[in-house]
Amino acid sequence: MSPVLHFYVRPSGHEGAASGHTRRKLQGKLPELQGVETELCYNVNWTAEALPSAEETKKLMWLFGCPLLLDDVARQSWLLPGSNDLLLEVGPRLNFSTPTSTNIVSVCHAAGLGPVDRVETTRRYRLSACFVWLCRLFTA
Image (cartoon, rainbow, N blue to C red; front, top):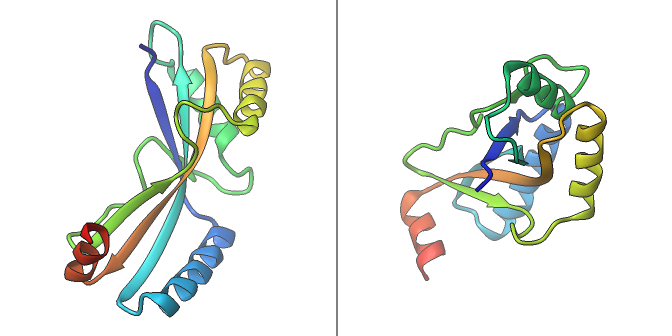
């Protein structure tokens, strides 16, 4: 089975503004919510026998990053949940390939990354709130 590689993109100023907007909308319905942070995750299906080389990893990180920001893509998540946080990931089902995936795979192949056969993007949310409230919300 092919490994799925994860590339996490740090929120830029635009995503930071979107997080603030999301937080304000959610706090209207969930006043206990203290904060919302987001990041993008590129889930890459890698079909080669070996994991990507350092050069291939560098290409993938360059493709998924913003050309105006340095070091905005990492192999580890930027969102580190605390004891009072809930981490949610929202995206397409893994058994369904999206048109966006087809386009990203074409770009990867043009860049010489033939082992990439699927790339799905998910958005990850870290919700900070009262722990008791989070438990009630997701166990009710």
